[in-house]
Length: 476
Image (cartoon, rainbow, N blue to C red; front, side):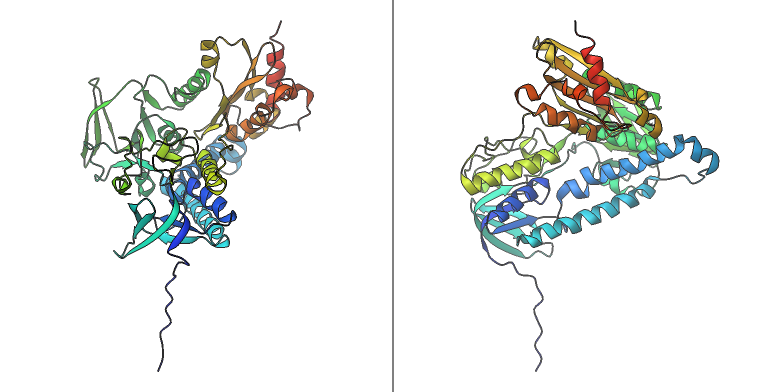
């Protein structure tokens, strides 16, 4: 008589010290910290693979796409290759997605290893709260499973906001998730929403040679940035042939076999092959049955938390996109670790850093940390500006990436660095040098550091020395 071996992967426990709902950056940060602290941890992920929206639809795919397109642009601008190795092939959106898919696969493999090595139990399925200590998991095949824990962390991320009056089932209307399934190369695209996501995808499609129109519901691009950086991006977009429409809102959107027509409240009409709607995001809290634990998210699906990331229910924590600002993958990871530290120790001294760098992966990149000129002027802080233009740097000339600049804002009297703003290739990397100095206490944070130190030559980092000398020369 033979017996059939049951190969079903069963969790080690149905009761855990902590349950983490969501395996994006926030959930991963929390789970790893809790597991390394000796707790039994369960992870619940609704998608078939771990990594969350960051890995599968957001940060990783969009940045991998951006990198591929940026390389294509550099190739087209390089006279050596244009003359000696003419490129006849036209690359499409689907072509550049190939690299993106390989990066996603590597990320999933790597992050799966983190959970395995730390003995975390993985559950795949949708999570619903039964009570404040109990989670019901519904799998894709309809079967359910119940697990319990002392503490539960919600890190379910967000999804693109979809207005009810736009038909997202239409073949030529996309959001920032579904655009990754685009299976043809449009000649003309309209992007509605000029926030970070909209601007990044505008760069990608424009870089692929797609006629790109960007509709902005505000009066300037990325108004939270230093105005000089925002103006530089606007100029670069227009100079590359992009059409920008500021202070516009749609009245209605029509989808036909010939394309999409956007009727604007101003009376204008815009037509294109397809529409990418990228105006806002919604927290993924609507399917968690939060009413069973007396938690009510706001209209955008976000929860209110205290300084320890506790919600109104003291053993339920929230972090990442579902708590709003700063809605960055990097910040979510740290929030997860801070919340986990509090669960482990009940000590709340660990905090998110004050000046979190912003990285915007347009082409070229934008990155900033600290105060803007507008903030300092409003606060009546006596500051001065030091600038370095990338076109004057030897490394930029070698790379052929001469667009951009580095700007350092510093106090006229104490020389303390107050803000750093960078526009150009590798901006998101360059910013961390300045951030490290800004984090120093007392006399360690002064613009004079960049004059006293010696930089490798030629490098992009040398921009700090050039900008520091420029700024100090302005003092009198």
